[in-house]
Length: 271
Image (cartoon, rainbow, N blue to C red; front, side, top):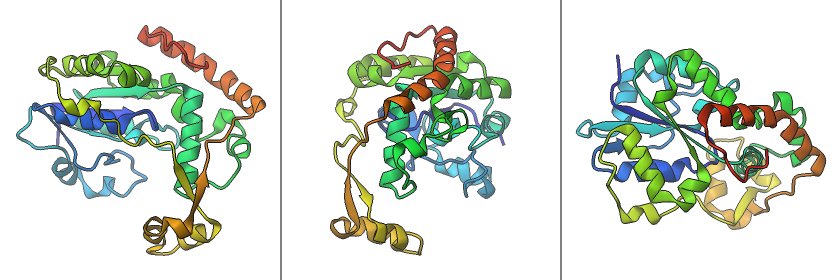
């Protein structure tokens, strides 16, 4: 099975992909999947075994000119290897969109996300030990992730790289850029572009009791149903200087290669 006229927002995690997914879906020529993160091409997830027919049914309406989905797990090699190769086999002419944020800021948000969902219990300095081979760090090595898609057969002409700050601060210009890249009416505008998803200053994390309950069926649902009992406040942690320096040392060469490849300056990034 081959998919044509397909858009895939490939990441990065905690970089505004949910908002971008919703903005793309507002365009009358585009229909994005109702479930945002299909994760179909991640073999380690449950959906790959369901087959291409299942994936076809999950994508947006067949009446639209373009259909698409958004799965930040697609740019988490080597945690989830083989994604670009599987994707290229069935959608070699796909349009790929990669929205990025400051690599270190993204790592901290990734850590907070995992704490919030009960997937992380270590303090941040312990969680970010060994940055050369750390699963939090790999998704912030953006040039490294792009290389995987190019090696699989995709061209840079099929990839649009965006800075999250521009999506936040100059949204309509960025959406015109996206629509022009895809090949749909770039003059389209919508009041829904004002909405920003998953933006909240308050986050909670499961209590120790909730973490134990979440190991059993129904425990996760109970945690979210009764947050006043099973949640405690979660503050964004301060990153120790030594950890920040170690991350910057690992990420700086990748960021330099990314700037050279894309021609974008990513002004204001910490690396």
